[in-house]
Image (cartoon, rainbow, N blue to C red; front, side, top):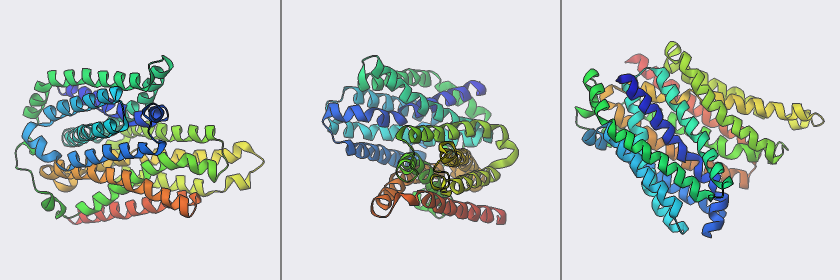
Length: 398
């Protein structure tokens, strides 16, 4: 039964990843059909993120009241309804309205499942869990592309994903007894036994600030790289649009593949070492990105492209183990009774990093230079390393 529940959680994380890359792949056509400006995509994305932040912050209270299984099922239903609404939206403002329940559903299930796996399963499963999210994120644009090629347009793509989410909702509701069986076998389901703490109480726990800043920085690195690497390669490194776009695709493949491979060594190395290895990978990648290959090898196309490709590959593989390892370490760092609340706040800080830091680099690139991209990534990574090591030092004293 536990194995069946774990398979269901993996499936839920594929579903969680499916819609995450839809907006970016569909927006070039969506904004034309809806009469919206190209830049308005950022508004919808920000509203989704805000909904996710809100539900993440309050995830402990609602999970305490309704349970992980029920929250997962209801959140998936909320997402399915929002995606169906996207498919029939007639204007930009309707999309803005639907972005809120979409974000609320995504944030609640993300926080709930991450904590559940951190409490009840080994570190390798956390790595594979987020690998499955990457599979969903990669399949989403493919589904959108197929819908468009069949003449169904972006509405058909959103409708297809909403149907998939609805089917999973039915499965999750049917599987609610599995969560109770697992709870009986794991008497440590803390979040259902103790009253949830207030946010101000959580922030007073020693080391929480270190972890939140580190997690903020990680998500800032991942999102900034995904959004700005292509522009950096084209403008600063002289690569073609097609080559630059392909490199960014490989970045996400690196994250997904890296998490799959991390699962085989995570239990042996432990969360602390996995985070250190990830940070080292990112910094090695930054060194390759800083090599001015376009100037040193201007006459050799292969050498001109190989250094940024290797650099971005290292950044992707470096990112791979950090997110799941930080989440999995939470119960050990702060106690199982505090893990749900802290993971919820971590999710909120993650999306704050996603909202703030790529936008900040956009300002830097516009008013200073986009050439600072590797330096920007390096500085954020160094802050992440400092905060992570401060947490390790504090943990060693306890």
